Image 1 (cartoon, helix red, strand yellow):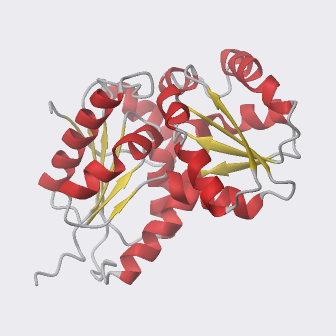
Image 2 (cartoon, one colour):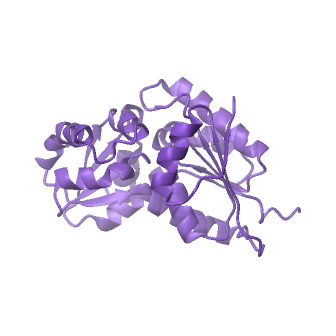
Length: 268
């Protein structure tokens, strides 16, 4: 069998939010090559129909497969919730979604068995987190809340803007009534609003960043499949977007803390 261990990890998201996963991958797997696709022309996914989300997710997967990736990370909670099985059926390689790692981490974190999940409309409607959390620990109470404005706020780069704070206050105040001790950031855009969300929820509530948890799972999957990069060459990072490369570069560099050199706009 052909050795593909030096091939890149493929990551896709509806926009810039998946960089929260890429940042953790760079940190936890510093020797790995990464190809990222952000579907910035069609963001957000969370307000679209299941059929459309499936179509977009499959197109994104086929693009990453054309880049000879060795594993695919669905760095989009909406796609993970709706299209994980579809993607696994067309990709003959490891596929890692972000829902299970986040759910597992939340169950391991909660002390009072009261967890809240925030996400896009589609993710929350799918009940994917709720089902996964309940399958791990039936006695946990799960409270879910869709926060559709968070994605466009992040895509604008307004992480610590008063608009972000007002939106967070509007969405999250009702969750505070349930005495939750753990909050799952059920969209990879949301960690970019972590400070604002923490301010609204208070210091006692632990925030679960699925990006961090997913990167740990990716490392484990690569190890189990003998796919860790053995090359001594400096790793490369390639970024592809479907629209607005300048905006992606500006916000992406600010977030990753490094220059984005290989950035290409493509039409799917």
